[in-house]
Length: 151
Image 1 (cartoon, one colour):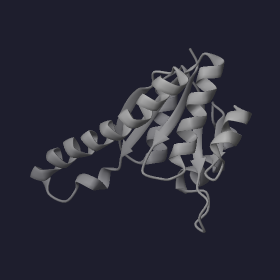
Image 2 (cartoon, helix red, strand yellow; image 1 turned 90 degrees about the vertical axis):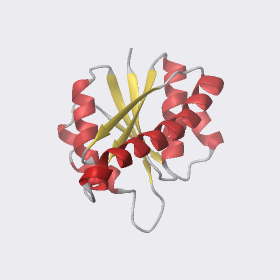
Image 3 (cartoon, one colour; image 1 turned 60 degrees about the vertical axis):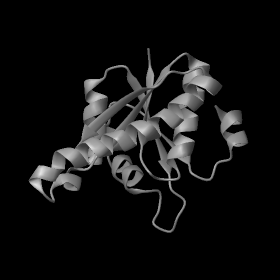
Image 4 (cartoon, helix red, strand yellow; image 1 turned 180 degrees about the vertical axis):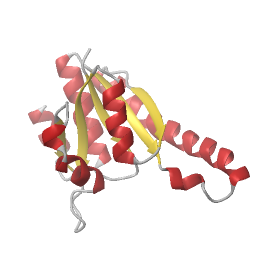
């Protein structure tokens, strides 16, 4: 089964990427894999506290994931899977795509602020020509109605 890989983070544009991935998966008979990445620098403060902080980060991720997963199950009939990795975001996204041959499309949400589309979109599109999978970039300001009409 072809899967849409979407990155779960705290950005506003993440919501549209999730919606797009779920709607496309539902309409094409695919699946959704949600990747959340814990940056390595989050745990470098105190060695003994690192494990506790890591566990707390995973709990937050799982709670956040469940909100999206419930919507995908209830509204789109798609049961997403969660993958949590630790490391640099771009490296971990590329590693996940290499390790899971069912991933067919990477779905990213583009920010709308003055800082540009966001660091993931910027870094991954620089190397888009040499990637082994397509990237779909979903505008952060796209309405729900427009998303539904184009999926």
